[in-house]
Image (cartoon, rainbow, N blue to C red; front, top):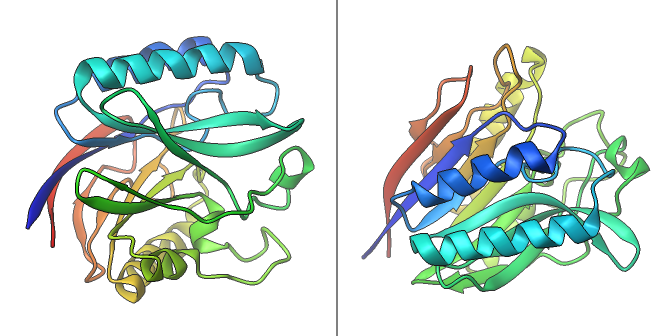
Length: 240
């Protein structure tokens, strides 16, 4: 058995990289874990009006912080690829190298007005852990938010060997979807027999409608942040 210490950050995401980057770097520098995961678009802010060159410079600072703190980070960010905007997770290792990226495959119908869906579902292997990344609607394919069927991406990742799914999200505060979000996390963790680590972006006031925390392969919360405010969780999971 291998013990992996995982940290997740539930944080307010500002529209500006200038506001988000220093806070992300501070979380990385003060972390005591193997992996740390941040919310969806937590670096650039949730929009497509970010500067690609300056965002690239911010990625270099994240990589350097990971190397200095010996932590692997999953960062939510916008990215320009071949002239198109993507909602992306970037994985920087504790050596400061880019392990890979995941581009959101199922952006909502509203997000598709400014971003392009990703096309490849990837798995990564590092430090004895096989894992995948999903972003927001990739996991729960929320009714009314897109015209497509559910491809069960969590299950697909489990069939590719993933033991953990890092799920970066920004769900908002509408309580109508709270039950749907929680039940989906539990059911998909059980179906894939894997851990789901989720980190949400919290509004400035009010509560999020999807918890940040770790769902076990049995469909039970191992650790969960309060729904209101900024929080960090740390938990050790054992991987066979």
